Amino acid sequence: MNLPSIATAVVQWQATHGRNHLPWQQTRDPYRVWLSEIMLQQTQVGTVLGYYQRFLDAFPDVASLAAASQDEVLALWSGLGYYSRARNLHRCAQAVMQEWGGAFPRTAEELATLPGIGRSTAGAIAAFCFSERVPILDANVRRVLTRVLAFDADLAQARNERVLWDHAQQLCPTEDLAQAMPRYTQGMMDLGASICMPRKPSCLVCPLLSECRAGRAGNPESYPVKTRKLKRSAESWWLLLAVDAEGRVWLHKRPGAGIWAGLYSPPAFKSHEDLRRFAHAHWHVAEAAWQELPAFVHVLTHKDLHLHPVRVSVGQAPAAMASEADHACWASPSVWDGLGLPAPVRKLLDSELRP
Image 1 (cartoon, rainbow, N blue to C red):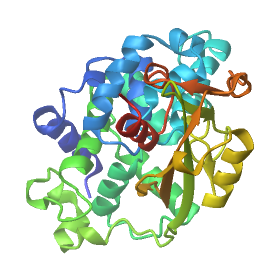
Image 2: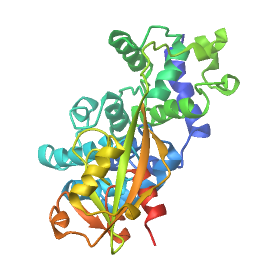
Image 3: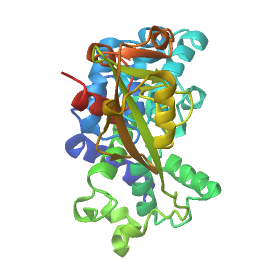
Image 4: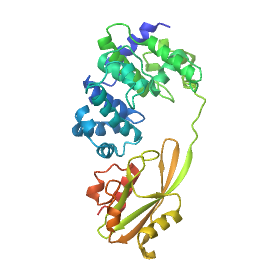
C-alpha cells in the first residue's frame, strides 16, 4: 500500500469532486469552523445550513456567544437535537474567553481540552484552520479507513480504536500542509458521505479503489467491525398542556441532566394518574375541561419516547404559578417562540395552541 499516494489521491479528488461550496469551507476562522463541526455531529448538512447562519446572525463571534444566556443558546438550537451539544457549545465559548483570552488554541491537543470538543473535532479544527498534520476519525472517515486498510479489529475495544488512530495519523499528507491538510480532511469526510457509503458503496468511482483492500476483495460492507450494539429502549410520558383563559400554556424548565435537559417543556409524568393528581393539586379542573390528544412517538438515538399529551383548561392562571419566573412561565406563542423547546413540543404547541 502506497501511503503518500492515498493522501494525494484524496486531495486531488476533493478539489474536483468534493464539497467546496459550504459556508464554513470559505473561512479559516476557528469560531465558524468549530460551530459547524459541533452542529454536524450526528446531523445532516442540509439541516445544519439554516441553523448555522441563524447562529452567526445572533452570535457573530465567540465573545457574543459566551455572553449569551443558556436559554438564548438553547432557543436557537431548538429542533437541532442532541441538546448537550448546545450546552457544551456555550460552556466552550465561555472557556475560550476566560482561559484563552478569546482566541481558540491552535493545536488539536489543546483544543481537545475544551468542553464538548473530542479528539476528532479537535483534529478537524486544527487541520482546517491551522493546517496541523492531525487526523480525524468521525463515522465517515472511520468507514473509509477501515475499508482501505481492511482493518478488521473490533472497534468496540478501545485498544483497536487507538491502533486505527495511529494508522490515520500515518495516512495524513506530508507536504504542502497549508493547502493539503484542509483539503485532505474535507476529502475524507466527503468520500464517506458520498462514495464510501455504509450500504452499496460506489467503489468503481472511488479515487482510492486501487489502494483499497476491501474494495479489491469485494467485501467493503464487512467494515468497520464493531460488535457492541447499543440496546434501544422505550419510555412513555404524559404531557400536561395546562392552558389558561388567555390561551397561554404552562411551561417549566427541565433539570440540567437527562432527556431535554435545560429545555422548556410542559410538565411530563410517568402515568396518566400522576398527571391528574398534579393538575388537581394546582387547579380545580372540571371533567369537561380535559382533552386527550393523539399520542405520538418521538425517536431519540437509543430510545423511543411515547408521548401522550393531555390538554386541560384551567381558567384564570393562578399568580402563584407564574411566580417561578426563572424556571416556569405561562407562555403565549410569542413567548414560546423565544424559548428553547424540544422539537416535538414546539410542533405540538404550534399545532394545538397557536391561534
